[in-house]
Each structure stands twice: as structure tokens, then as C-alpha cells.
View 1 (cartoon, rainbow, N blue to C red):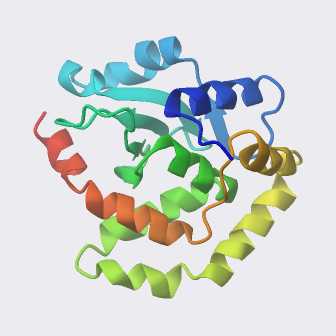
View 2: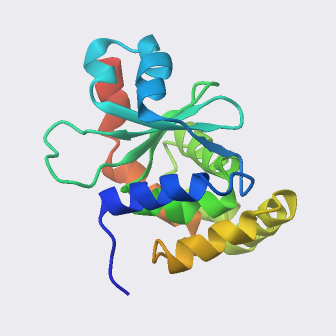
View 3: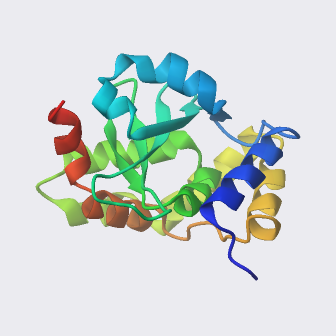
Length: 187
């Protein structure tokens, strides 16, 4: 398989949304609308470094973050929670796509746990086991009628695999970009 660039993944993902939207609790929003509507609540210095591209079922936003000093094409993906949960949960758009089959509610649940258990970062493995991840994946597939179409798209078009251990993927991203919350707080 040939690895797709981040730009190619984004275009393929947008194309997927033209044919199906009932594969999970995520809504792709046009960049223009995202920047006009959702970014207006942020200081200009913050909004200029966030590329908001999606909404979760609860209204939380998902964006890529142009981390200060990062000039590469790959950007971490952040959750800007409607309930206050904020942080990096994927190191790249490809990682985000590999986590999406579990649903954004699961992503929020894990990220909330990371924030509340900062003093014990390794304890997530006790709660978010692979058995629990399989249960969440099965429940998401049962709830959304087109979930199987996303899974097929992920494998064949995006040429990516589902994250086998979503909590571990998220823990690495969260720990690698712990400066996100400090950066937000600076504004």
C-alpha cells in the first residue's frame, strides 16, 4: 500500500462525507464555516493556529493544531470540548482517522480520563483495556448503519488500519503535546 499524504487523506475523507454520514457521531464541517462560526470564540492568536474541521455529537469541536515551531505537514489533532475537555488526542490526521471507528464519545472519555488522572498517567491501561475497546467498537458499529462503510473506506481508500489500542495511541499523542493546554492558557 502506498501511504497517502495528509492533504490526500483530508480530500478522501471529504469525498467520503459526500456519500455517507451515518458511520459515527462525527460531523465534517466546511473549513470556511468552521473558521467563521466556531473559531470566533477564540482569541485571534489561537484561532489562527487551529483548523477546525469537525463536530462531535455533543457540539465539541475537533481541529488540527499548528503547533508553534512545527513547520511539517503533519499536525496534531485536538479536541475542544463543549464540557471543558481540551487536549491533543492524535499526533496526525491519519491517527485521528484510525481512532474514529470507536466514536468521538470514546475519544472524549479517554481524554477526560487523561486530564483527571495527570498524576497517574499509566493508569489508563487498567481502565481502557483492549476488551473494553472491542466492546465500544461493536456498540458503535451496531448504532450506526453505515459504520461498515467507514471501516471499508479506512482500509481500502485511506490505506489505514483501525487503532488496535486507541488509549495507547491517544496517550502517546497527549504526552507528546502536553504543551497544548499551556499554549491555550497563554492567550
